[in-house]
Amino acid sequence: MFTLYDQSTSGNAYKARLLLHQLGHDFQTVEVNTFDGSTRTPEFLARNPVGKVPVLALPDGSHLAESNAILCYLADGTAFWPGDKMARAQVLSWMFFEQYSHEPYVAVLRSWTKYLNMTPEMAARESELRDRGYAALDIMEKQLSYSDWLVGDSYTIADICLYAYTHVADEGGFEISRYTGILRWFERVRTQPDYVPISWQPSGD
Amino acid sequence: MFTLYDQSTSGNAYKARLLLHQLGHDFQTVEVNTFDGSTRTPEFLARNPVGKVPVLALPDGSHLAESNAILCYLADGTAFWPGDKMARAQVLSWMFFEQYSHEPYVAVLRSWTKYLNMTPEMAARESELRDRGYAALDIMEKQLSYSDWLVGDSYTIADICLYAYTHVADEGGFEISRYTGILRWFERVRTQPDYVPISWQPSGD
Image 1 (cartoon, each protein chain N blue to C red):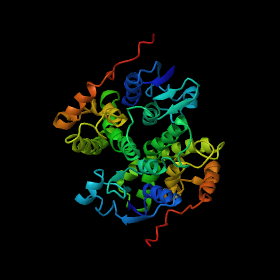
Image 2: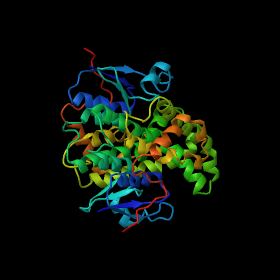
Image 3: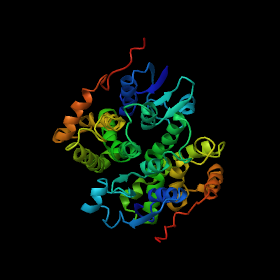
Image 4: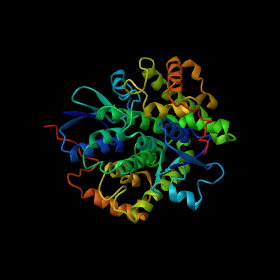
């Protein structure tokens, strides 16, 4: 059985929960929290020196950090990461885009808005982050205005990766309703087999 | 022949130049520049909507963006990305770490220090970025103090990825001399077959 070191509010952790469920894996979650220090304990840092969720513990006791690396590990050899060498690299291209050009703006503004008290330092940077977040959403919209999926003609881990924080971007104050291509893609993702929402947790039985 | 849309000063572009050379690929470079607007032209944005280097053009005319996705594409099926499914995912884990927890601090402070005039807004953020950069270097040092390579027992694209900006971190004001494990790893990387420095360019003949 897999164990996912999880934070229920985290889009990065949701990526792993969603794919584990869609692949039919038996798994349990252990809730940790980046806000209360429980990702900075010696025990947690031994699992992931970066002190972040999610971390996947394999049945053999080894650990894998970084949400997108977890997606790649789980999807390797499945229909969630198909295609030839170039298509597989294009999936990775979207996933590196997500970590560098999307998550630091779209996810961070959600965190600041929903979970933290915005400090004057945060408020001073909000406008810059919002512009960059919209730039990332514009790039997704450009792709999704003429294509059902981010890569090729099927749902892949690139879609899971970008869906995680994009579908809750409104919680960070982004007007996602202006993006008709992205809204149609949300609906395609939500109707995939064994889709579960960000609030879902495995039952533990 | 491959064409690399390149920027000679960029560590991200260097990753691709180094691996293309070490794999023995015939390639040419086209210099573009994020500072003078040449990555924001309609022609360049058609190759990469994100407007960043590097971009790899394949012989069939298709394009691949994101430096780390380019490394994965080129290394797929070679000794530069070996191992079982878990080892391959651990390589990706380091590469996602690089884009989220290392490059935005180590590379950005190099860019601000070496290539841009630091504005008051940049100066106000320097201390935070430096702390985060050192945190990333600490994590690398922890691994490299007991292991020759970032993953497994050989040089992989995880090493190329992290080497690119770490080996020039001093240009951003980081005291890299305090990291003895990283310094020994620099020397191991530099003595790999067909290693070329960041200043190297293909001859074009």
